[in-house]
Length: 258
Ligand SMILES: Nc1ncnc2c1ncn2[C@@H]1O[C@H](COP(=O)(O)OP(=O)(O)OP(=O)(O)O)[C@@H](O)[C@H]1O
Ligand SMILES: [Mg+2]
Image (tube, rainbow, N blue to C red; front, top):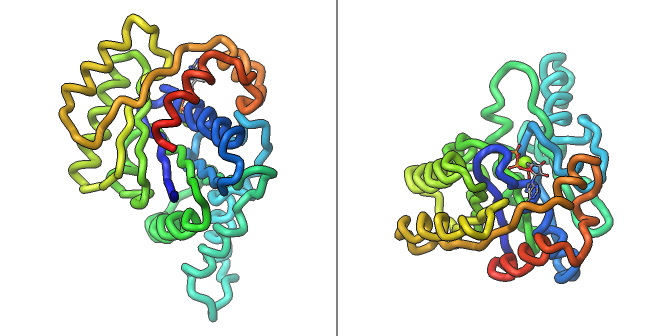
């Protein structure tokens, strides 16, 4: 089994939270699997919610900034192809934690075109994830990365929505854009986060009405006080107690993917 699971959806709906709950489930129940977590959201850090500190210079953004500085100062070795240098930098940005590896994109600051760097990155991510059983990819909010086809090898796309019209609208736009640019996923899963039980049917109907074969309702995770509290106090979401009811819900739905 090799899976690349990407989390997408409107800003703030719970993409990162859902990814970390899946990570927790995998670490506690499937500890033989090699796991890579890629945080490709430049504005947020998964590291922040799992109690790790990552310095900017250890992120890909940081490494790319160094590279651009070197290009400007003409300090690059002339005998080495640029893509090899970028690839090497990406491998150097891999953070090896106890139980899984983490790649932080970080911000790509400054002016100038990142197109070339981005295209090399796309390949590196695809290459890198071949070394792992499971890659979890946290996508930035919005749709551009779909249009740019980052993560072409994603097997499972999880679209997270909260109980809002905008959340569901973004979910539909993601499906449309993926179709337009011909992105193929084995499975597309819709996850309702922070849904009160009496509103579940609304999302259920929305998904049924999509009438798309490979799009399925993954399930629901309730709004949870403990999750809010850990977030507010800067705690580690992986330390959420085993018997937390939202974690129990998460476990039951993630079994469908893994
Ligand atoms: N089920 C939940 N119960 C309580 N709080 C939650 C739940 N899911 C998410 N949150 C909280 O909502 C906020 C946004 O969640 P999160 O960061 O996971 O969203 P996101 O989609 O990754 O946001 P962004 O688009 O900024 O990356 C956080 O404060 C998080 O703790
Ligand atoms: Mg996030």
